[in-house]
Length: 202
Picture 1 (cartoon, rainbow, N blue to C red):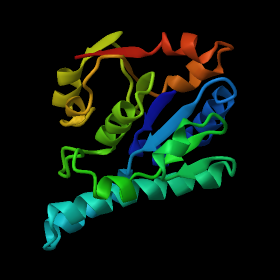
Picture 2 (picture 1 turned 90 degrees about the vertical axis):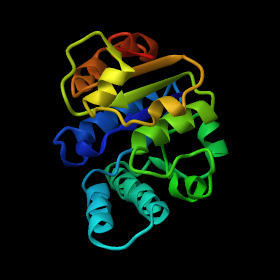
Picture 3 (picture 1 turned 90 degrees about the horizontal axis):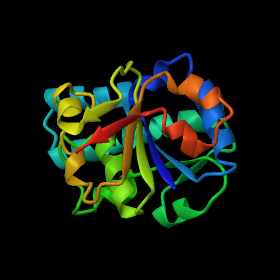
Picture 4 (picture 1 turned 135 degrees about the vertical axis):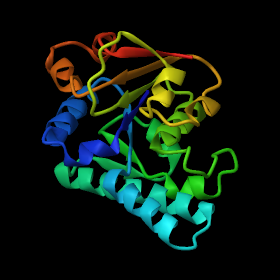
């Protein structure tokens, strides 16, 4: 089981449909669970938070809901995608699954509710909760190094500040940019494809 975090910037990417189609093919042999970012939808929540009186708790909940807008967009791209709220259902192998996190995380005390917890943290929290085999951050910027330190990625605002607080055991955590499209097109099994992606060190 792998947790895949697709950044919100993919919302406007011309390659989003292709990415979903390629990932769907990998679910024939591997259980892939998607967590999506809120992108422009989350930005609107941040704007409203700055302009109006709103508690951080409410703002965080609305930001989580904004990620689910992207999830429903993915369902439009591929009707076979499963949108799932119950994390127990995520363990079942089958079609591509997207987790809808707002209902569970709204009341979850272990999830920090502030602007340092973006969908990156949602993915990291789920990764640890499900004891998944690995976690892959799919970003929209090009990454040149083979290995990245988590703090460097956080300092560059590529990954959020709270991710490390949800990962207690080092497993297999990676990051990749738009080059994932070319990697997924190669006739390799998922495990070999992952070896072409950048490692994240803690």
